[in-house]
Image (cartoon, rainbow, N blue to C red):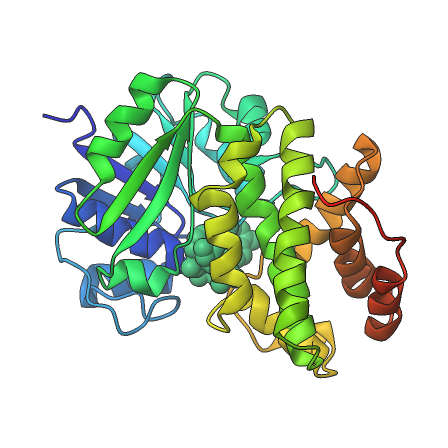
Length: 333
Ligand SMILES: NC(=O)C1=CN([C@@H]2O[C@H](COP(=O)(O)OP(=O)(O)OC[C@H]3O[C@@H](n4cnc5c(N)ncnc54)[C@H](O)[C@@H]3O)[C@@H](O)[C@H]2O)C=CC1
Ligand SMILES: O=C(CO)COP(=O)(O)O
């Protein structure tokens, strides 16, 4: 019998909702915290997140709340607010969260300004709670519909990791255990930036070869950053690295990839963001990862190019020409 009987999900976007659905299928009692009163009401009354995951019927046993005190009563919390809001959310949880309640990071991103991973944000804001990371190739809608999915579940404490795998895993939601939360997080954060790059290349009509090159050389950038942060290269070859990179760089279902494609077709970032309510984490993470790489002295040219296009007014064609003009070098990380 799992010690994680009650799971709290903090964040009522598409992914928090999908994770609530899959945790319920795994036999957990689930409470979902959402920031928007209309999302809380829709889940409580209609058993559907009509704002962020419309068309998926949720089990009526999933409770919805706008009160952090209620969600903090769970045996473990999944943290699924967008990365740039995790610090504020964790600070709000701090006075009401019991010491020792495990936290599972399910957001994918690096904090702007600080360059902190979500694990580093939690080490500062909730230092008395153990942390795990759940990441991998997971479009929310497919998980919510119960389609087969595999993820990495990483924890420095192998006992906690195994308990979380047992609590959350089902036949169709299959967590693979890892002891490398840092590598797992870096993969999930950087792939969003690379998905924007792949979208731009698709939107510009530069072909499938170019996309495969970006995925592969992007993977090398990911590995460099993960290793510099203390992660293991092999983690990036798994679901949370290569797996998620392949998913998000090849599917227009990805918000990051489709955003890049729109930019590649000549639309402005402000226009594309203006018509969406959903988050494309790669936009903020491009700036955060590029700054972090510069600080650490790492060569991450694809990430730097995406940051230049999104945030520094670089023209797409100029950024692409600069990448193509780089000197030839030996392959490897
Ligand atoms: N949607 C997906 O397929 C997947 C998403 N993720 C990750 O999950 C995290 C959450 O993304 P989604 O659930 O997709 O979000 P979403 O795009 O469906 O919804 C936007 C979310 O942002 C929140 N938000 C907006 N302004 C806010 C503020 N000022 N403070 C706090 N929260 C605010 C909203 O409450 C809502 O939960 C992201 O890090 C994303 O990369 C990870 C795997 C799959
Ligand atoms: O993280 C995701 C899939 O693993 C979702 O990707 P997007 O945020 O680009 O839609």
